[in-house]
Image (cartoon, rainbow, N blue to C red):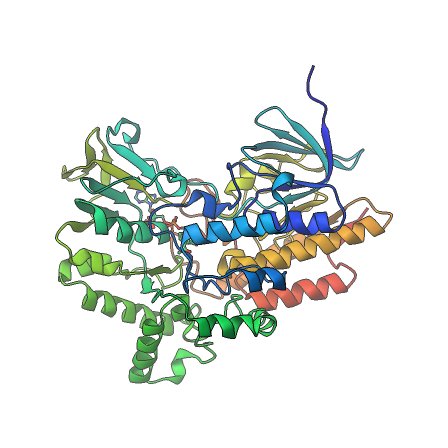
Amino acid sequence: MSDPIERHDALVVGAGFAGVYALHRLRTLGLNARAVEAGADVGGTWYWNRYPGARCDTESMQYSYSFSDEIQQEWDWSELYAAQPEILAYINFVVDRLALRDHIDFNTCLSSLRYDAETALWRAAFDDGRQVEATYCVMATGCLSVPKVPDIEGLEHFQGRLLKTSEWPSERPDFSADRVGLIGTGSSGIQTATTIAADCRQLTVFQRTPNYSVPANNRPMSQGYIKAWKSDYANRREQVRQTRNYTLYNNPGQRSGHELTEQQLDTLLEAEWQIGGIGFLYAFNDVTRDREVNEAVARFVRKKIGEIVDDPDTAAVLAPSDYPIGAKRICVDTGYYEIFNHDHVDVVDIKADPVAGVTETGVRLNSGREFELDTLVLATGFDAMTGALSRIDIRGRDDLPLSQEWAAGPKTYLGLMVADFPNLFLVTGPGSPSVFSNMVPSIEEHVDWITETVADLERRQDQTVEPTRDAQEDWMAEVDAVSRRTLMREANSWYLGANVEGKPQVFMPYIGGSAVYARILKQRTTNDMEGFVFR
Ligand code: N01
C-alpha cells in the first residue's frame, strides 16, 4: 500500500537563505508550512560550495538577515567578507534560533509538481516516492544551484582525483604533493586557485576567458566598525534599500565618469582599488552603460594586472580585453593575480589552444601539449537562474509544463509568479534584480511580499492568485528593454544563459536597479495588485 499523501498549507522548496526565511514567515502566519531540501543540511549555496577559499563578496554586515533585530544584534561576524564556514554557521544559528529544523525534510529531492484546478492544490512528488499536497508552493531553489557539467571529452576516464567546486567534499583534500589542474576562472575558480596555490606542488589554471577581478581587501572587522553598524542597523538597512544593488558602498558612484579628467579618473579608481570589493564597478554611475567609461575602468584593471604579474606574457593572458567589465560577473579576490608570480603556478590559455580532452593522466590540448595531473578541479559554473526549476517537472493549469512555457526563455511577472501557475511563488526569480543585487535583502523583499500576499488570500474568499499574461508579457519586455540600454549583454555570461549549450539567450535579471524595482513592486501591490488576478 502506498503512503498516505501528506497535506500542508505551504510547501517551501529549498533551505538556503530564501527557504529558511520563507519557512519562518509562513509558520509565523499560522500556516502549516514545511520545507524540503535536497542537501543533508541547511545553507543552500553555502552548504554545497565549500571549496577552499569560498567567501562572500558582499560585506558581512550587509549580507545577513535584517528581519530580526535580536538576530542581527546577537550574531557576530569576524571578517569584513565572511568565509563559507562562517556563513554556514550563521544560517544554522538562525535556523536553531527560530526552531525551524524540525520543519525541514533533508535529503529530499522534489521531482514533480502538478496543479489540480479542481481542488486548487499543488501535488508534489519526491524522489523517494513521498507525495505532498499544498495550497501554496514557494520555490526557494536558488539562482546558482545547478552545477554545469562541462562537455569535455574523456573526463570520465581521468584516473586522478576529480573535484567540483560546487560539490566539494566535506573532508578537506590534501594537495601538498599534487600537481593540480583547474578549469574555470569565474568567482569560484579564482577563489579556489588562490587558496590551493598556497599548498600544492604545482597548479595549472586552464583559462578560457579571463575575468576582471578586484581585490577584496578583506580583514577582521574592528569592534568600532561592528558597533557603528549594530547601533545604527535600522537606519543602515533602510539606506541599503535606497540603493541600486541593495548594497552600501564607500563611494556611492553618483557621478558620470565623463565628469572627470583622465588623471582624476585614475586617482579615483586607485582609491577604489585600495578600498576593494565590488563597489569598484560602481565608482561611477555609468560604468555599466557608457562604453567609454566602461573601457576606462577596464583599462585600469588591465594596468593593475600588468603591475602585479611579473611576467608580461602571463599578465597578457590574464588580462580581459574583449568584453565590457561587469558583463561577466566581476570577481573579488585575495591575491589571485599574485599567485602567478610563483614558479609552481601557471595559466594556460585554452581559448588559443583548446582542451582536446581529458586523458587517464591529465589534460591534452589541441596542439598536443599534455599536462600530467594528480587532481583536476572543475569550477565550470552553473545552469543559472532557471536550472533548478527546469529540472523539476512543474505543470500548471491544464497540465501546462513550465518547461514549455519557458522554452524561449523564462517568463515571469516581477520575477515572483508565472501566469497559469497559481499560488506558485518564486524567490528572486528571473525578471527580478536577484543576482544583480545583494541577495539577502532581495530575498527578504520577495519573501515578505509572498507572505503578505498569502495572508491576503487567506482573508479573502478567493483561492488563488496569479499574474495575467498581459502583465507578464509587458514586464518581460521591460526587463529586456532595460538590459538593452546597458553593455551587460556583451559577453557570453550566465546572466544571458550563454554558458549552457542550447539554452535560450535571454538577459534574465532585471537590471533597472533594486530600489527602482522595489518602487514598481510597491506601486503595483498598493494599486490593488495590478497585473494579478484572484480567483
Ligand atoms: O561560475 P562562472 P562560478 N572548458 O560561470 C569556465 C557566484 N559566486 O562558479 O567564461 C573550459 O562564473 C568558464 O569559461 P568561459 C557569482 O555570482 C560568488 O565561478 O565560459 N572552461 C568560466 O571561466 C558568480 O558569478 C562567489 O569561457 C569552461 C568558468 O568555467 C557565480 O556564482 C563565489 C568550460 C565558470 O565561471 C558563478 O561563478 C563563487 C569548458 N567546457 C560564485 N565550461 C562570491 O561571493 C565553463 N568554463 C565571491
